[in-house]
Image 1 (cartoon, rainbow, N blue to C red):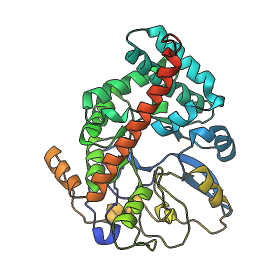
Image 2 (spheres, rainbow, N blue to C red; image 1 turned 60 degrees about the horizontal axis):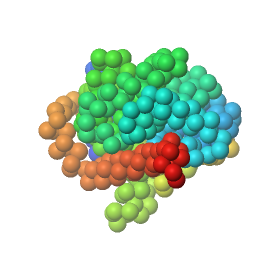
Image 3 (cartoon, one colour; image 1 turned 180 degrees about the vertical axis):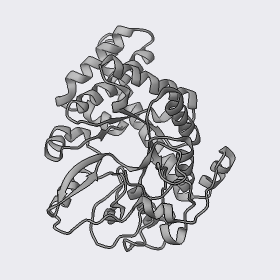
Length: 360
């Protein structure tokens, strides 16, 4: 595995920009199992050179994207599940989830929640039939500030996967990178052997806390970081070496990283990181690129650095994260949007489950 920088190094903003995300490796000083993650992995051929790159698999285009690009891993999120649940192609899965929720019984709210958990797992299980690796399944964003509730929901999802005959080794639980979410990830990894993918990550403080928690992956949203700086500063364009959402790069390009990243920078600056989020559309553009893709990031660079280790307890984390206006705004905005889609999904299923008996 290739890592951007050993987690126990501080960053030099003049070199890395305001959003450099180190995470642990098994080399010098590292004590985590994880890696720097900007998505999930697939293998493609670029310009005649066999190169390993990565992308989030859009669930709504899963069959086409899987067949065309042969990814190792994939992910879901509330927005993708909401969209897919309303498509004719996936109504059998929706009906199965509804039947499961009703079978368990209880108050309507509880039935809907059980149906949603089942739906997430059904979609994940379908994806796992087509890929050899892991699928990321997200815990409800409305639990982002409740550690115990996140742990309980994660274990519930893992149990549902187990009932479907799927080992937890093939699952990554996605958690919001709040302090509570990071501590939930730590507990899941250490006590339950459940691997976590920390999402909605925008600040250096979040990355350090994730590394210290020993989570498996982090997912910085580099595209959204760039969008924020363009929208909120006087500088409206960035050279690759200046992009606030990525590292310097030697060659030009337009490969976007970061989940739902918006305006596209040159994501080949991230070549060498373990995993990279690239949509199927942009991955298709990469396939047409005949230039050689040279790794820019490496573990050796981190091992050679003389930057000092930093430690963040809760108070230090909250203060350092709070000092990053972009990160504060984007984290809260991301949680709100995922939560809103979760509410919409609840309404869709509730209407399907109970509208007939209510005389609607």
